[in-house]
Amino acid sequence: MNQVHIIEAIRTPRGKAKESGGLSDLNPHELLNVLYDDLVNKEILELDLLDEVILGCVTQQGEQAGNIAKSSSLYAGHPDSVSGLTINRFCSSSLDALNIGYLKIASGQHSFVIAGGIEMMSRVPMLSDNAAIWTDPETALDARIFMMGSGADLIASLNKISREEADLLALSSQQKALKAQESDLFKSIVPVFNKSKNLTCSKDECIRPETTMDGLSKLKPSFEKLGSQGVDALQLKYFPELKEIKHIHTPGNSPAMADAASIIFLSKHKHSTNAQYKSRATIKGVAVVNDDPRLVLSGCKLATSKLLKECNLSVKDIDIFEIHEAFAATIINVQRELEIPEDKLNVNGGVIALGHPMGATGTVMLSSLIDEMERIDVSNGIVATSGAAGAGTAILIERE
Picture 1 (cartoon, one colour):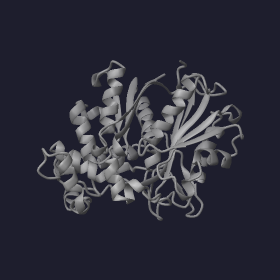
Picture 2 (cartoon, helix red, strand yellow):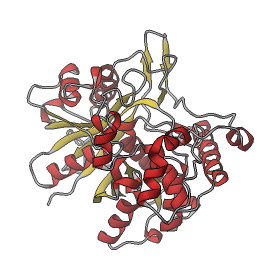
Picture 3 (cartoon, helix red, strand yellow):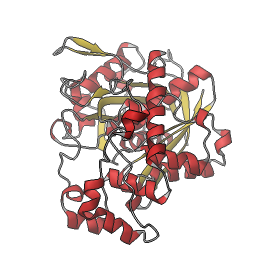
Picture 4 (cartoon, one colour):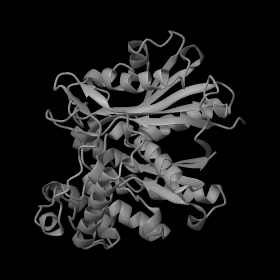
């Protein structure tokens, strides 16, 4: 098996998923093109040597439909010979795109791959593809599919996680993210010029500096009404040890919807195609799992545990973790169960503060992980995501 090296990891800022957001006037092809151009302009990539573009995208509807990996490659002027593959594994999509690229290079099929993700939630709203698992109760029931927020409240109820704990986690995420942004720690960001608004978007827009515990405590639960419409009763039927479902998640301790794109340039060599840029990291292991779908968002914990076990490592052996804040209760449970120290986990905030562009989130997080590993000069790190229906992916990287 070939070693697989990360030559570059870049992303756009995360824009607010609103018409007023700094990226909302660009279509997904235009946004991805900013990152493709950056690789070419830095002479990291010679296009004639690129084998494939693999992208995650959750809502493949409208502008994001039609195999956006291939169509965006053609839009960017890549050679016709470059293959394109778009995948949907819910919010783990971009890490799974990266895994596919890793496997293709490791097996000798490819030499150079771009892998990442795209999600323009201001232009292609979540659930706008009208999938039967979200719109048809009978299909959802047969498939044991619950909405993400309902799964988060179930995890909170099963693990006795309080509303106060969830709000404290959210406040910490906001504070860490703000400090990191003010300290210019997100080096992987490629600024994006929005000609419609005549502005350059260069910073993540979803951080809320005004957040306080008092403000968070006043927000109403987001999924209580859904629970009263039959979801609570069904969850209690599945988990009879519970007396009630506690609805602790609000807009303040849930992921912020965002627009963003992110890409990782993978190579079988320890350098770029012209040998000018050295590898930043090597992929040392990948774990892909699916946990109980009724828990919805527990996959990142199981994937991280599996990865550590398969690599014969413990939490103490890992320098830093970047794990998906798929609602506050999920990350609280991960930290409790795996006993990850506070100073190793999401040290620059998570998606509750920074934004969650679903199909792009995993590789956005990976770029931030590499930035931080280089800044504090450590050797290894793990990035992990949860997706709906129990999906989970974790990747171990080692700095060159």
